[in-house]
Image 1 (cartoon, rainbow, N blue to C red):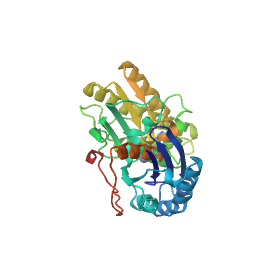
Image 2 (cartoon, rainbow, N blue to C red; image 1 turned 90 degrees about the horizontal axis):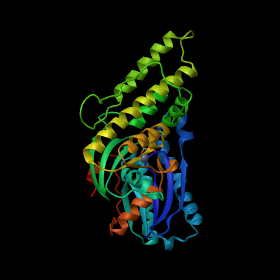
Image 3 (cartoon, rainbow, N blue to C red; image 1 turned 180 degrees about the horizontal axis):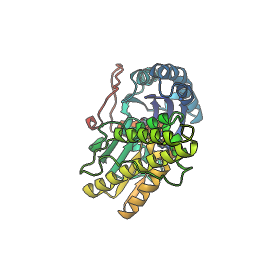
Image 4 (cartoon, rainbow, N blue to C red; image 1 turned 30 degrees about the vertical axis):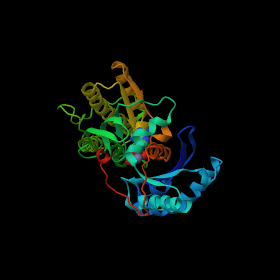
Length: 343
Ligand code: KG4
Ligand code: ZN
């Protein structure tokens, strides 16, 4: 089974081909980051228009890179949600049109299922069941993953997602978009902070998260430090200290909840996926946690932590192998779509 995957849920246009015997045959990602950076965040209408420009050329490039013809593709998987409606519609329309033109089946894939299964693209892939910490721009969830489509949400963020908190902290400190990598890079310049930020919701039982209070604590700390400085502005050194304190607070909070979830489930495999799983401090901390639990830690390579089509082609391939397909020409996408709806 050879699957062409298309991802257009937010600000990356990505296309890939996955073969269930040979693995990943080709993949490409075009990031719109430079275009949105000017506005300090994703502008949905610009995102949709740029997907329109990029997706078909990328499909051509990926098919050429895999040295294949469209006849050698057995199915087309596309991200059907959650995400930006207009952006999703571009990928879904192209996928359905190609499926019709090539007479192949098409299938809409849940973006977060793609992220959850991304570690399966690596040589050292986890077996089911595993505990997954899904940390992206829009979601922070702890999930018991028992098999394909068998996902139980054990805990999730009640307000901001971890990635969103990174992005908002970056904006507050005047760092470029996307905030996660910028905050992580500046945090490296500090050896430690002279103050401590809260670890939200760790003082009560349960596996839910809340990051909006942390954002307020960062703002208050930044304002206080700006007032204390000679020019009334934050120096790079002080910003680095704030980034360090913020990143440590997020990593600690995530690690505390992972420890609880591992104890609760008794699982011996921990997967981190989604954009924030690219964070090296988080990987380091969870690797220490996993060793102390005699547990294995899995994460995708950095480029497959953030949005990509390899994960969509992979998830599509697993579902096509189970004979699943959307056998209609209708184009259905969902901006909101709970992961627990899948089966
Ligand atoms: O999974 P993703 O690419 O898109 C969504 O599905 O949301 O995640 C993007 C998020 C952004 O909030 C970005 O700031 C964050 O992942 N991110 C990071 C890092 N790289 C990306 N956060 C912390 N550290 C990083 N190195
Ligand atoms: Zn994503």
